Amino acid sequence: MTAATGYAPNRTLPLRVEIVRQFKRRRTIVAFGLLLALPWILVIAFQFGPQSNAQGQSALRISDLATASGLNFAAFALSVSASFLLVVAVALFCGDTVSSEANWSSLRYLLAAPVPRDRLLRQKLIVALGYSAAAVICLPLMALLAGTLAFGWDDIQVPGTGETIPAFDVLPRFGIVIAYALVSQLVVAAVAFLVSTMTDSPLGAVGGAVGLWIVCTILQAVEALGVLREFLPTFWNNAWLDALAPELDWSGMAKGASISITYAAILIAVAFRRFRRKDVVS
Image 1 (spheres, rainbow, N blue to C red):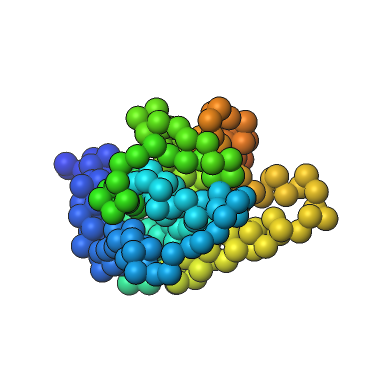
Image 2 (image 1 turned 30 degrees about the vertical axis):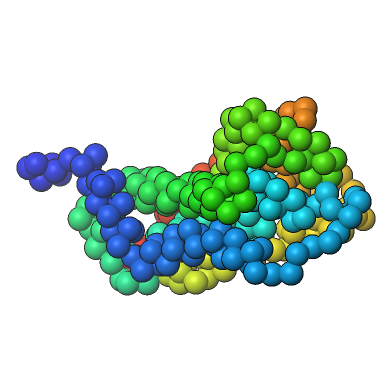
């Protein structure tokens, strides 16, 4: 059999089409609206809430230093959102991408267009990861803007020690913080994407990824597991704090990044392998 005249597999489902389709989704607008609004909600909470009178070592917690400067506030906003809100956002973008097509009974029509299966997954994964990256980046940047306007641009105080680092010296490290936050969410993205290729329920794909993250968080607290906890994707979730220490320490972030990338690569490979053989009926 010969291909139809004018048919080119590499022109099917262009990225720009998928980007626009996903951008117009209500969940995309709601997710970004919530992420961009959260820093301002936190600012209001700090401005009108009771002021902490903690002294001594307890005052060196990241929450007690949140109003010290815009950089401190951005670090606090990232710390409180990285373990759940950003997880939900990433799971939403990556878990909804294929399963929603199956749920709408449009997946088989896309494949009948025909869009090659690998290309379909690749295009959807690229767009999903792009929106996930935008979500992870926009929150700390908006928090930095909100914190600077509310609490001023000043040197950052290091949680735990109280040492001060000049703002312009730590600003490049803040890029490292955001980059590590992106890498640490790759496991969530990969799990959500894998489940998305296995079900026609977007809620199931999103819930599966979030649920696995919660289970790993619980297991992380079980000290009886010993060094096995270090292989949990959540164990190194806060390793980015080492980037804000007086002496930059890469060891924790290197271990966390290697574990996250390894898990993500395996899970995405399984998703592609399984989808190639899947009997798509929806």
